[in-house]
Image (cartoon, rainbow over all chains, first blue to last red; front, side, top):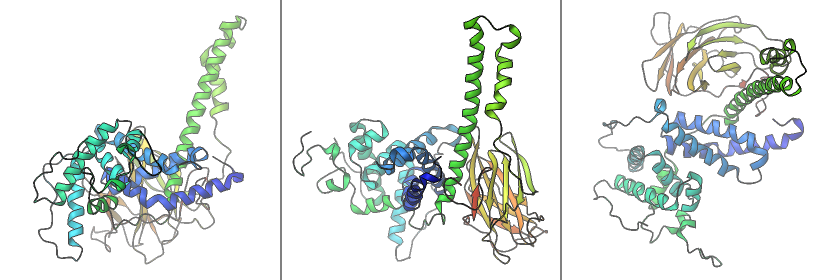
Length: 178
Length: 274
């Protein structure tokens, strides 16, 4: 840990943590679908980042911590004792919403549920590709998979989300794949 | 892949936003917007650096411990190997056991002594096979209404609730630590003076109750702490009267502690180094 002479490192790290916390928790949430786990994941990932801060602070600390978060989410999902629990029954859904932004809430709810039904790797691909706006190659590098696998996961995951957004529509066809 | 001035011909390098139109494998803006903010009401802790600082301190403690163990093992191996190489030392001065016992205390010894403040017992138990205890304490300065946790994945970590005032509702804080590979969740805080117990409603499983204890650390607040195995979400914490009836509303959100610190860090600083 740096001493007092390295104060600027601490200050830049503190600014990074405070400035990125919300965004990183949103990323982690889209992978874990649990606010508590998302916060814990971000907390631990930022703690790891601190030890690498001298190396990465002038590079791309956000990419570093994003990779840590994604790897952490995938590792956690592989552990049996903390694995995701598939449920055959969905939680209750309001019959009819009347709030002004009810459509947005419903849509968010549906997409959240469809995300939960994806594998964590598929979810990571969709989120990184379309929420974080990374290229297929960047996603492939980050996850350690081929760009072809990224395309496949992105297409299938996205098809599920499209269907969730328009549940009355028939499932999406295989257009645009590849 | 061939790049022109601004032309990217390989889809693999193209961010999703640029390929929206005409790309069959891209979401519309609505899906994208929802994906980017699945938790629109999320506000987060008042200062996330406090949480991150606590993790950094835990990691640093673990690193030190591992380093000490590694150093002791390395020295033991070295000392044990020297007689074999030189063939000079007698049996009384060689052997890994004696070498380890001679060197381990020097490398793994405790850090400089600190003057411990008085700690008053609040709660204790066993979680994931590890004995834990939590006590109230006033480390000094502005940190007066604090809880010190030891065992069960904690290493004399301190969390303070100095922003709580008499008349305020219950204030709680959740912390996840590990006992070996097992995550452990602690919920600790301060309750109003009339509270006898608190009921902690978890994300899964039955509610957990804990005594709200008055100590000499604070003449008004009652302290409480519970530890449960697993990384568990907390739905709410409610103070209870001695007869078990609710004393005020359940508090659903945690507070940002006024201080989080480890054993070798003063509670007056909130930076990553403590």
